[in-house]
Image (tube, rainbow, N blue to C red):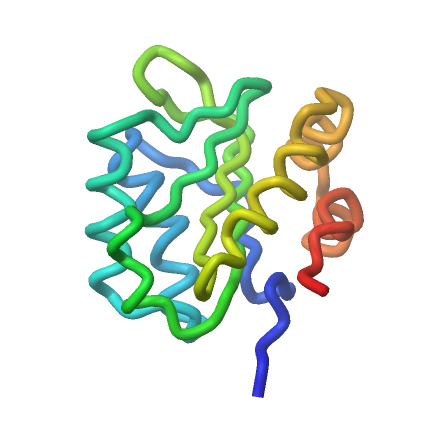
Length: 146
């Protein structure tokens, strides 16, 4: 049975984070807690960040695992963590974290859809200002794997 890629349980609102590592662990933890990935996947997300920053601009970071972490992905999924006060990603302020886990090659499809939504600063602002999970999901809701 396939799980929805993004559901309300995958969204965390008004989170305060002290730094990049905590932020990545938070985004990955949501994926672990909801059965998308195994715990080891979080280590690969941290590993990926050492190689290249997942900061995308517009106050968004998209932490995801390394190429060889796919064995720890049980279902494709997204986590969204709203950080209104921002968290520092190597001198860049991140206010929306989107954790990605893709089964097989699905992460590329998911990434491209996320990139489209997040390239519009207005969408990011709506996600940061959202007062409910429903409101936030409405903005990012176009991201569905078909």
